[in-house]
Each structure stands twice: as C-alpha cells, then as structure tokens.
Length: 567
Image (cartoon, rainbow, N blue to C red; front, side):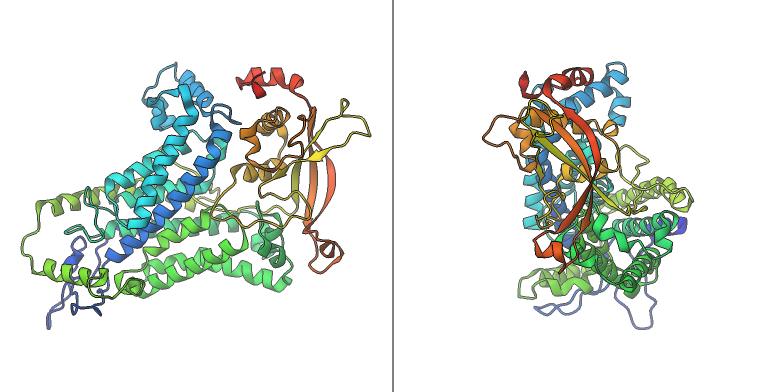
C-alpha cells in the first residue's frame, strides 16, 4: 500500500499524438498536447485528460459544502452559539486557559480556526457570517462550475474553522472527509482564473491520483474495520440488524429489515467485495479504474437509498468521479457548437501546436509535485494504521485534517434503544397521577405512528447524538441535561431543533425526565402496522431522573453555562 501512495505521482501514458512507428510518451502535467481528434460539434475528448472531470469534481464538492454550511447556518447557534448546548466561546476560552491564557501556536494547532482572531462579543453573528459566506461561495462554484484556488481555499478555511469549534457535534468522520476532499479541490484549480477551461492549467494527474488515493483509503479502511471488528461481519449476519439499529432509519430501511436471511448474507458479501477487493481496481489500468468508479458510485447510491447517513455517502461519491477521464464523461456535456466539448477540442489542438509553454506552467508543476510529496508524507501514519490489527477509524494525525483515517460500522448494535424526553406540569414528579408528555425530535424515532424520515444529505446533529446517548449514560453526555434545562425554560432557539413541543402555547413544564426505551420495527402487514405503527417499544427504565430549573442551577454554574431563560 505504500507503493500505492507513490503511484499518486505516476505520469499518465498515451497523452501525446502517436506518430507512425513511434513509442508513446507521457507528459503528465500538459494534457492539452493530447490528440484532440476532429474539431466540431461531435468532437470527443481523448482518453487520459481530465478537464471535464474537474468541472464535475468542483460542482460536486461545492454541492456538499453547500449542504454542510446550510446545516451549520440552521443549527450552529443552538448547538455551539452563545446559548448553545456546548458554547464554542466557552470551549475556546478553556483551550486558551490550558495554553496559559495565550493564543499561541500551540493553541492554534490544537484548534485551528479563524474565530481566534475575531471579536467574540457576538459569537452567534460570527457563526452565521461564516456559514453565510460559505453558502455564497459554494453556491457560486456549484452554479458556475468554475473555481480558483482562492475560492476553494476560502471554503476549506471556513469549514475547518467551524469543525474545530464544533466539539462533539462535529466529531464524525464525514467532517474530516469533507475537509480532505475540499483540500484536494484547492489544487484542482488555477490560482486566479475563473474559467471552465483555464488555458495552460490542466488538472494535474497528481491531484487526480490524490482523489483516487482518498477513495481507496476510505473503502479499504471501512472494509478492514469491519473484518477486524464485530464478528457478525465475518459471520455474514450484520445486515440482520443494521437497517433497524442504524442511527436514523428511513422508510425503505423498514422494509429492507424484513428481507430473508439469505439476502442479508448476500448484502454482507457484496459489502466485503466492494470495500476489500474493488478498491484495488484503481491500479489495474483505465478500464478497471472506470469499473471501480461505477461500482463505488452504485454502492453509495444503494446506501443513500437505505438510510440517512448525513452527507457521508454523497461525499464518498466525489473521489470516485476522479476514476473517469474526459472521454468517459463527455456524454454528460453538450455537443452543440460552441459547447464545452468543442471548446476543449479547439484548446487542445492549439496547445499541441505551441512550442513554448509559459513560465507559470513550470511553477505549477513544482507546486503539484510538492503537493504530491505532502500527501505521500502525511499518508505514512494512515497506511501504518491500515496495516495495524488495532486499526482506529475516523482519526486525524494532523491538526488540519489533510489526510485522515476512515471507517464505518466497525461494530453493529443488535438492539435499538432510544432516549425519550418527557415533561410534566405536575408539582410532584413522583405523583402516580402526573401526566408526562413527550417531546418529538425532527427525525429520530419517537412517536410510534410517525413514518421514518428521509432527509439525506441534510443532517440533524442533535438527533444523531441522541442515538449515541441512548447506549451511553447521561453522565457521559452532559449536554442532554443542558437540553433538559432549556426545555424547562422553553427557549425558542433550542426548541427549533425539535419537531414538536407538547407545551407550546402553555406554561413551561415544571419537570423534565429522560426515559429509556427499546424500539423495534413493527411487522409489515402485522397487527401493529395495521394500526398505523411503524415502531413498537418497551420501557427499559429511567435514563435520567426528573429535574427542574432550580435543581439544575449549580450544575450550570459548575460548567460555566448560561442559566436557561436568563434567570
């Protein structure tokens, strides 16, 4: 696999015109010298160039950035804002205090974010401005299909700044994966030019191999963590549980869960084939590389259909696009006169006739080689981790998250448990006559008759963390007690994270408690399903005891959290 890393800088072959009886030579950084074929509306790009691939990659990266910044704009204030469940201002203050009250290199390395250099007096506005700027820039790249290194670097810095103050809400693998993908996207582009086909700036083969190296590590890491992890992956039984116990199931998962045992075993074998064997197709020539891209995209689409895994699977499609060259993607672009395909053919013919390249082309080549060496160097601990029997997943070995380890579902939960938050207006929470009313979340299971949601690639961060909290304790998830306090105070900002407040238009509850339930899908066509129930549940016991605002006061003071409701 170390050899695979060195192949990132390998030149493409067959880029120059073949002369009769002459051997083919490779010019990796100047694919515009390739044979362009006939110029006209039917011109088809040659194999081994990536101008059209770059447009697809940039638009795809921009789409995922747009979704990520949209989630941030809608949810960051409630989660990490001034009155958030885990305020990022308090987090940065604690980091600064740990490093002796200074914003020095150590503090910047621990939490790289431009928020260090901004005015913290209105953190909510800072979070909004960062998200809105990210939305604007990503929307421009998405619509235009054009970008330069400056715009892509802006997107990367903005999202890096949010991830590094997001704490547990931003602690999942897809955040680092988006940053690594976005970092690669920076080097796809010219420095300043905004054009679909920037003259003398072809996509570097080194960057294209950077994307391929990324999808190789993602898939192989995911496959190895499964084989080394839960025995159900080796026994081919994990899919018996996955659809029901995944973090946020969708309606299709409800029916997939009831598939016969042999189909679940077949699914698991397909998963192992796709994650453990298919990645090596990348290194077996152009046709096998294209086959790899097709199989990986198909696999990710199937995962998108069967679950709400944030934007993870959408994001994993992106590096697979780098498996396709212009010749294989040309059908996606208009062949009309004056279209991209014709302009590309004309530019390549013009480039082939040029005898002297501008100095900038050689500078760019040095930058690309330096980039390749950086990726190879940062890949060393990642490769060692892949080879280690104690492999860790979704980990960064550098503070900028440029090259990371990945993996998913190394272990599978066999039963689904949920934390249900309930409130009562009763003076005595232990009164048997007390009426407890349930809060409903946006997407996580709660109401037995509510259809599972379908939200991918959008992501509800609170719902996702509630899934993890259900198989831990509230002591391990203090933010859930913070949430209870905000519900007691009926804070509108926090309530916007929920789907239904049973005390809307009424006095706030006097007490909030957490109840622990076991959830199972109902049987399609069975008695519970005929009553409109998607789920059946059984109470396991209390998750946290009844709490009121007065009783939480010291809890808040000890953690430096603002007291809910401003009391």
